[in-house]
Length: 434
Image (cartoon, rainbow, N blue to C red; front, side, top):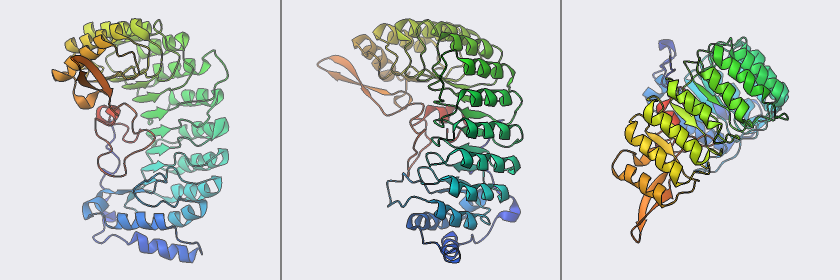
């Protein structure tokens, strides 16, 4: 079952408070008790949280203390700051999410986060992406999650935990039955670690979405892809899988496709930034003719060219009625292939999102996609191009839409989770923050 978006769960009745505690005042008191200077940014974010309406407190709130906030002066959170914050949040049962991305946390400060995770029974979302957490910090968090039975979504993105840190998470997944979304992208994971995680996921039934982007692989033999394919044959719960920058070529793509003939759960497959060519796409085309599960396929920054685009368009036009989103951004496709994809959309009404920028948008391609958009078949917020005309000739301009626009950042105000900003969030609700 797809989990409800973070923050939507109503807290047990005994936790609902008519008058929420004053987080800001508690923070100032904790700074005094621990003889730590006040972090003015943290204080301001806690003040804003205190202003949440009663319904927000009842459902649970997410504290957004992100170091990349551009709307207010930011004083990034340090190890000392997180010690004070953890002491305040220990009794804040209404806080169900904590966003500490782009701060200055190291392994020293993570020990306070780990202790908090062991004691806390309400936090469901924790974002630690792009801090300075290393191997020992990863071990502390992984050990804490052996006991924690609440956290369902963890982002470690961009922390250089390495293979040893990744192995700690693999070991934790053998025990933890609560974590549903785990992002270990850009964490310098090695071959041994990826194989271990794949092996564990053959048994773990809790994880619904995992990001293994940009590992450090020193072999061209695609051992890790083989193990991930074996996992997909046996795993019936994984919904979302990110394998960006895995140096994947023909052999790996074929192994994955063979596994996905037997897999009936995966809905979002990210193969962006690999070495997939036009010949390799034949395997994906054949898969799409039979697969009845995949809804999103990301082939961004490969080299499928016109022939690859035609293989996909044939499968989508004549056979597949499940795929809803396709990204072929920056794949050296010219008008011939792009026109074929546009023609498939006229036949296949299920394919609603398509991203094509970064290819050779010649006049034939511009005309084809302009017609799709002007006819209403392709909605303006479901693609990354916008038509315009100069001297009677059709052209396409780039729009800032895509499958992963908000992967590294989210807006500090307004709607950050709409379909125009990130199609995967609109289609696959399993990953509110992926």
